[in-house]
Length: 249
Ligand code: ADE
Image (cartoon, rainbow, N blue to C red; front, side, top):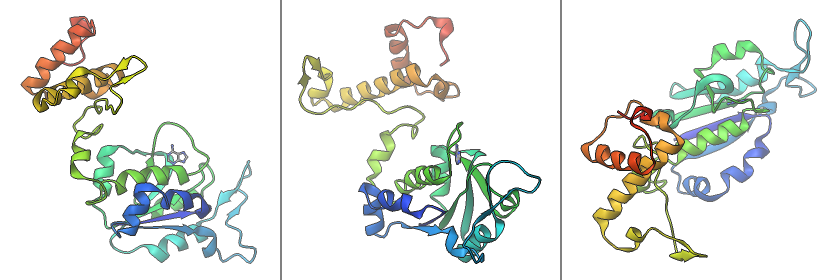
């Protein structure tokens, strides 16, 4: 998988690309990642990449020429070009799985309200990472490339994916490490028992509990196994949720 990030601020990606799992994935050549400086593509004598808006108004607008020449220099028939922007389709784990199938992602970091609108006609999709406005698309591009990279085969172990939040429609169960007693706060006893089946059930139940508490919306259209139904009944009783408050029929 190749990820090209097009930005006016490539230096923002130095730390991101050279730290932890992203760095390892690059060194193992599981992903190729590059931050490409849009300014290098301007044909303006003064290296300008933006201009005043037609019709007047505040702020500067990124010009079509450097942005689209930069896109064209990288785009092949196997590229998918995504513009980062708050008016785009909302990014989530399902989209991360969709994007990891692509051979080449081009992530275009614009500046909100500061991009010639015609640029949208040349991209495949606009993607938002959430309902808030960032100063630019760079952090969104990091979010997306991080979430996609960790799904590339070999970047992290398969088992890590199965249990983690959103992969099975639930939030991940809580994890603990030594000491078993931290200032009187004890690790749940079952986790010290070595009883694998009981631990599995405990974790599933705690996943259900956490999802009910924090993200009940995730449970709305769930297809329940018998075991999950039984554990959820227990959780609802323990949490004192009245039958008519149940979101999980
Ligand atoms: N640029 C500005 N805000 C953004 C958002 N929420 N998602 C993606 N790109 C953005």
